[in-house]
Amino acid sequence: MARVKKAIIPAAGLGTRFLPATKAMPKEMLPIVDKPTIQYIVEEAIQSGIEDIIIVTGKGKRAIEDHFDSAFELEHKLLESRKLDLLEKVQKSSRMADIHYIRQKEPRGLGHAVWCARKFIGDEPFAVLLGDDIVRSEIPCLRQLILQYEQTGSTIIGIKPVLPEEVGRYGIIDPGRQQGDLYKVKALVEKPEPSQAPSTFAIMGRYILNPSIFDCLENADAGAGGEIQLTDAIQQLVASEPVHAYHFEGVRYDVGEKLGYILTSLDFALASSELQAPILKALDERLNLYRAFTG
Image (tube, rainbow, N blue to C red; front, side, top):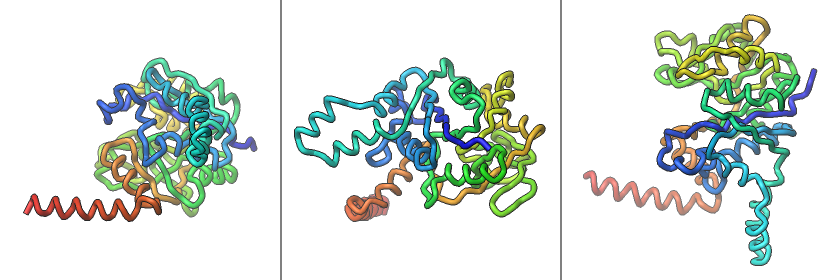
């Protein structure tokens, strides 16, 4: 069985939920404490054993490439100032992995973004990591899926249960035979109405895909939102080969919408020994002030 060595990170979205902040800055560069969100995704891929990463970008995303490139003037200044801890952090992002880039020329959906990277992937299994989902876990989320792939050889989708009223925001699986946290997938539905959802197991932005997915994407029709949906392509796979879903271990953070982004930033800051005490003190002061104003 071929080893999973390559990963696609789609980063061509317009970031409309964060306008006007994302008018000139990619949403993937919005920071969680002191690192842009996309760096957390790249770090997970590397910690999972990925060797080559291709980031699918779009217009106005040059800052992503700059972040993972060297910055000679900044690094020289930090070295001269003997700010070696900061220098190490700055250099880390440019030394993490072999990162390649390709541009999605028009926003045609996640499925199309994956298809754009087909020549980079070739005839190998590969991972897809979405930037709206950050997962904190003892074993990296993607590594958990790779271990399942090594057992099954089939496409693996990362899933988590959501509230019934939230299913319309996600791709939802219809689970079949269960073996521990691994489910055989009978069908997938993109953003169903709650009354029509086959389960509450939502696809959470992590995939291991066999290259046969490109045949499904080649002539795919537009689906939900008028875009080419990866979920629809995987649904086609279900008819011809086994597809599994894995309920991964860990806490999943949604940084693709405002409240989730704010709560993620707060959670990660509270996990910092340096920031925890002053943040708790500041929150307590603000809560008392808020109660005073509201009576």
